[in-house]
Image (tube, rainbow, N blue to C red; front, top):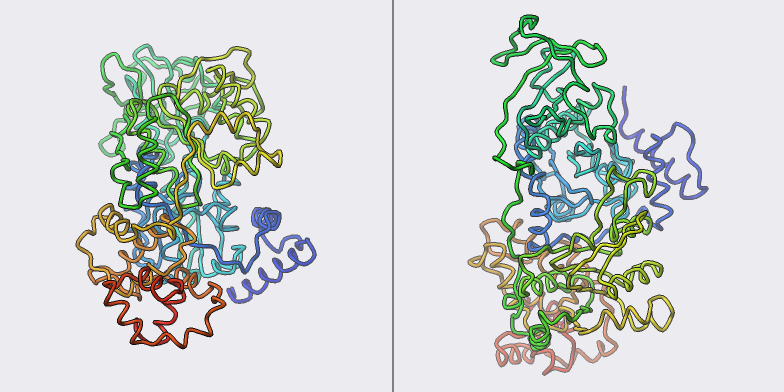
Amino acid sequence: MHNPASDHSELLNARNELLARGVVETGSVPEEIERSWRRCVENGMEAGSQVRTEILTRQELLLKQEANHLLLSQAQPEMESLNEQISHTRSVIVLTDQEGIILHSLGNSEFLDDAQRVALMPGCSWQESLRGTNAIGTALVERSAMTVQGAEHFLDRNHILGCSAVPIFNAQNEVMGTLDVSTDVKMPQQHTLALVRMSAQMIENRLFTASHAGEYSLHFHSRPEFIGTLWEGIAIFDQGNNLIAINRSGQFQLGLAPERLQGLNFSHLFEALPAKHFQVESTGSQLVFPMYTSRQARIYARLEQRHPQPGSNRAAAQPLPRHCPASLKMLNTGDPRIAQVISQVERVIDQDITILIEGETGAGKELFARAIHEASKRSQGPWVAVNCAALPEGLIESELFGYEEGAFTGARRKGSSGKLEQADGGTLFLDEIGDMPLALQARLLRVLQERSVTPLGSSKSKPVDFVLLSATNQKLREKVESGEFRRDLYYRLNGLTVSLPSLRQRQDLHALVDTILQTENATDKPIDADVMALFESHPWPGNIRQLHNVLRTALALAGSEPVSLMHLTQDFLDDIDNQPQEKSAPSLTSITAEAIKAAMQTHAGNVSAVARQLGISRNTLYRRMKEMSLV
């Protein structure tokens, strides 16, 4: 009889052998799990480490969802159908983008603790480099379906999960995202991966038909009963019988590689039969007929008339209207330093001056940059954001500059435009610019000087016209002095340098909370005074992003109740407990409960003002109040 406890122990032993001796006994774990474990070790990940639960803010999530609107719209019906099939289980269904960031989730998460429940909410990332071996992140790296059960997860905290994820591909074999089911590892899961595979295939087919316009489509398979199912091949043709696109199942059935589809028409793929030879078979209400491929393989097919827009060769699914996630006015919530930064920026907008935004991680640099774009004359032009720290060094050059056909192994047919070219007429935002490799810094400088870009593998330059905004959480001047960042590029980037203060330095915490409640459609939600007092005293290492995450999670956990301390996650509370005690702590005995109460009354509950009057920090004051049971 299968013994899960024995499996768990054997997996732990195998992982410990890897950590201790760098070896894994052959056959003790699946090869793809071993490869992932080794990547985790190479990245310096510790099996017992705690991952800070950070999710995108609502505005950042809206940007992600907007960029993946087609994937979301086609996946949601299949996710709901899958949820109906597994509703009796303790499972969460998750859809991610190609980076492993959750776009949508639904299901029963009661088997998880608060932190784990938050980790499966939209906006949270499951990249393997962040969360170790897991079905989503590892499926993206391996480009194949993955099941990761219990102790197969590299991090101890994920051992309660059993996860099955399948990459979702487009017709060009590019990963668009993943579909995942995460469940209690104690639940039976022998059929989960098969269900996820089927749903992912249906999403791929939906994406395919929604992404391509044409005169007609041919649905085919070697067995007539498979027409109209997830296994059918779909080929779309224009009025001249030229092939527009064919889905992955169709490519497989016809033995076609994605790079060999250009220039094909109907006669290259199929042999048309005179109508008198059609032996029509009925499959439900669909009319299915036998025919032959150009290689004389017998198949069955159904013809479907399509109705493209007259004179249009564009995809049938058009982008949704863009939603502005922020404005400079919305970001001006009463902090004097923020007001000064906004005033400076407003004076240079539309004057072709580069802006460098400095600030800690989570301080809102990308949101601030997007607000600058929306306030400019280029607001109707493209907004292209690139995180220089998130792209592997081997890919960042091709992502920025694009490439010509044949520039390197694996390059797409006809090549690909880079982010610099895509930003033409709009705004290019380079986040974490300090992490750009030195060699690429020289190429970027040349683009800024010459206003043209040369793709990899090409000798021809293309003119580009964009406004450049960049951001960093590092001290670029120090990197210049150490030789890690080019001095000439640094001076090119900082036409105007603005610094966003960290949350603990800002004076508009209450206004920020109100703004976040507004964006979460929860303006009438009461927040207990002790929660606001805790917010005042918190160090906020994750800044505004952390504040937004904390509030968003608390609102979800509170339901119809007011937000109270019980709705704050443990890792958030741990940030206070882990703060070092002030050296002046022994003298705190002189600060009585009456003194604190009087100061609180004088300053109408403003913890910061009370701490200043008493000559202690907010953290120390809050600890003293807890000791005296004042909160």
